[in-house]
Amino acid sequence: MINRRSEKEARITKRSLTIFLVALLIFALVNLLELSDLFPSNEAANIHTRGQYVEVHFIDVGQGDSIYIKTPAQDILIDGGDRGSAALDYLLSQNVKDLELVIGTHPHADHIGGLIEVLETIPVREVMDPGVVHTSKTFEDYLVLIDEKDIDFTAARAGMKRTFEDGTVLEILSPDSPSEDDLNNASIVARLTYGKVSFLFTGDAEIPSENAMLDAMSPLRSTILKAGHHGSSTSTVDAFLEAVSPEAVVIMCGADNSYGHPHREVLEKLEDADIKVFRTDIHGTIIVSTDGKSYGISYDKSVEPN
Ligand SMILES: [Zn+2]
Image (tube, rainbow, N blue to C red; front, side, top):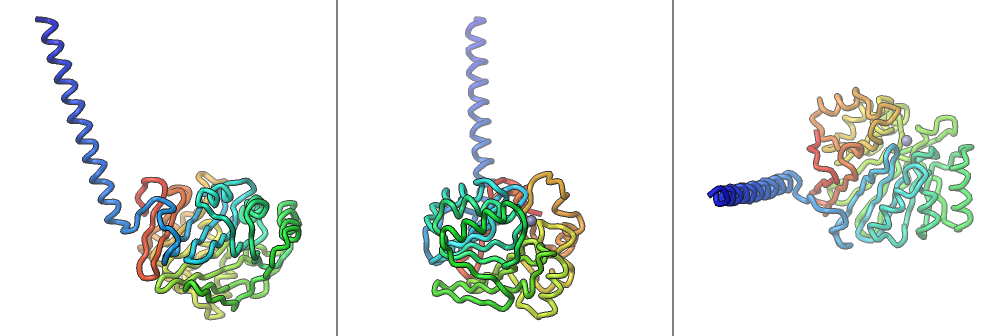
């Protein structure tokens, strides 16, 4: 009798467990569906084989910038994060065999450091940077590699524009006259357009650079803005944000970084303007995928954007 009862109890427990698991599965499925409603193209990385898509991968490299751009015909890298192999590992995981263009926005280590392993490993056709010198070992190693590998070099200047056969257009909006005494404001600011969708990549450009672009009536308006200087309050001045008028902003920074990036003022400004914010420290690697008409945003970690 006692035995039978415990058997029955065991059966009931087993049944409750099954019900619980089924409920959990349904809950997970519903959540998954809701997420894909929110982001129509919410897909895992590397789902688009090369086709009529542009993908912009804001790679989570901790405190630093690294952005991989896959267009219908080209592979482009903007910055490589700090020294180490985070950017290289990501590119290899995406089966990148060579890079048509590498942009080093400015000579600080959290932008060009990781380019060293990339340049050592992946064939690169052209490197573009502001053409200002910096006296760090990292910058020296980077220059030596460009020279050794005989890679084409271009000093970027505001007003340069390249129209590619695959339908993408790359415009350089800054710097105009960069100074090695102000490396953040020497940052290359580049705008990539594919059909109706555009991206503004700002490196660590700060308010003086933003004001110069406003004064020059640069074509700033963009669908997606990578906030300047890791979301620091020294960037993203009101008039600049208004001119760009982005639908979404990406902030690239490391979790609990010592600079306090992103700064509260910038986050509040974006919230007030009702702009969706995606952060590499919270969302991990963020991928924007577009066919030139609409776009979708996906990311590693299951955290709702603000
Ligand atoms: Zn930086």
